[in-house]
Length: 161
Image (cartoon, rainbow, N blue to C red):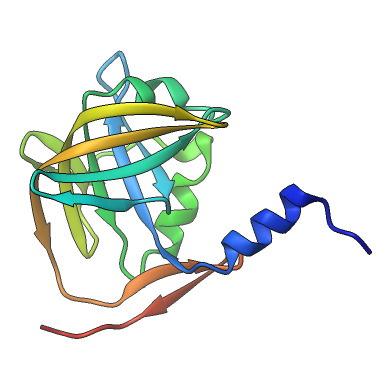
């Protein structure tokens, strides 16, 4: 049985284990949303830049694509339900108690790391928008990380220092 090239590519990229994050941003009315993202990548230390990719077909494309300031929360191993919740457009609204503020930007209360970012650059590439952000502030917490590998969630515990 022959696999089409797009499916073969999806399977190959699924073999690359990633961390799991939730990106938060406000919509045009000021309501905060969260979206599960595993395409987070560090770009530069000086200046501090990171990127993530937003699918052009995302139900919540506009608020995330247009946001000038946004947050990132790196999820811990105990947050699979959170990752699944923010992966669905119907449950991406932040509820009271979900978030706290870092440098004036809402991030999830739980997680291994939280970063407050300002959009530095946007680049259209294929069916995604690459959003490059300048990191304004960051903090970390101890714990094991939630991972995504071959379509499923897992965990990894690294050094404790």
